[in-house]
Amino acid sequence: MKSGGREFMIVVRETRHDTYGLSTLPEEERYRDDVSRVARGAGITSFGQGASRVLSYASQVALARMYGAAQLGLYVLGTTLVVMANVLAQIGMDNGVVRYVAHYRVEKDVARMRGIILLALWISFGLSLVLAGLMFFSAGFLADKVYNKPSLEILIRVFSVSLPFFTLMSMTLWSLQGFQNVRYPTYVRQILQPLVNLVLVVLFYLLGAQVIGAAAAYALSMVGGSVLALYYLKRVFPRFLDRAVPAKFETRALLEASGPMIVANVTNQIYPWTTVTVLGIFAGAETVGLYQVAARTAAFSQLALIAFVSIFTPMASRLYRSGSLDHLGYLYKDVSRWIFTGSLAFFLLTVSLSRDILVVFGKEFVSGWPAMVMIAGAYLFGSSVGLTGRILAMTGHQTMVMLATLGAGAAGIVCAFALVPRYGLLGAAVATTGAIVLSNGTTLFSVRKLFGFWPYNRGYLKSVAAGVCATIVAYLGKLVLPLSPGILTILVLAPLFMVVFAALLFVMGLSPSDRQFLAPFLAKIRRITRRDTRAAPE
Image (cartoon, rainbow, N blue to C red; front, side, top):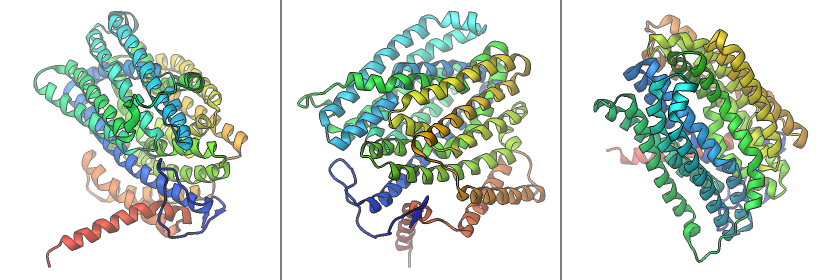
């Protein structure tokens, strides 16, 4: 079998793991094992991400329909402050805790695993309390002097309550990912917390709470999410709170790994959120609402990339720690191609159905389609380069990630301040697009220079060809079928596109690693089919 030029034998053999879930298979079969693990992890995360995006999108539609673009804009400004404060509270330890938990699992060092998790949780939670206090007591200044929107003050105060719980939930789930566990983070972050938030948003609206009820719903959902996250961490790592195991606190190692990443993470958040802030300063709340809907829709092009982050990150750390750089390079090439293929499908759907998607929010949102397409294209490029930032962070090159994101973020801020006052929504889209492309291009060439990894090959052209043909079929269907713009067009043409796209990929031929990647999904389908057949009456 070949994967990115590598040959390995297909041997049907029971997968074996040691006590800590680490593979004990020979090199060739271990690559197969890793591909299968990536498939299972990506499958779980994809389901979670899909559910999360649907729930989040439903929340945005509900807020837009219930309160209109202006009130939605105020809500977005409040959540922007919370998200940025959460990143600051974590001070880059999200990457550090994943990296070192994965490292110490290789060494079976339970004391250091316990110490690194406790250290990350206490530091980030303490910082979140400080930042929540600053948000609460500076709410009046931010609303009046910064945003010039006095009605935003009470929303900021309510959102500040959610910050400590948001940070505790996030850091706990990052700790779980160090164990290569993506199931529980998916349950909590992608399904349960967004679902609770949506239900409470609608409930509080029916009780007449207006947009302040939406902020309260957000806070309460974070409280529930943090409790569940801690429960699942205790379940995966039972000795997490076992005082009989002395915790060894590798404070210096964690902070050295986390220092550059806090700059990188804050800068990553600057792409969308600083643009939102600049829009809030120079434009009306309605423009903020339009941008948020366009950017949120464009982010669907990231769905495939996000699906692989949780499982690939600890694997990259483990492979680097064990000296398996060739193994890591082959896996990176395969994963990058799969990410691009999935992202391309979402991008082409976004472009071809842009107006139909936005009209779901209301006719006033349709004018944001050029911004949506532009940002979606930037995310597609980011997906095409693969998880370069994660490779750099997990191999001790956090400083490169920091410099790449810092430079791109600075460029994005300059562009936002230069373009937003004059061009409004389109200026914001250009600033965000430029920052995303610059950051991903820099990390791509950094990985190429350091390790010689390069994601692009002829497999990308096959995906593009299948995507273009599927888009043409969907476009012809739009011309032929008597469909009115909106949700009905999406429900008919999106499945048509996906079926044609998938069929063409199979017709053009799958590589051996593609078949290995799809094997767990096909096995699951066969098990379900057999179960249904047995359950059917004779």
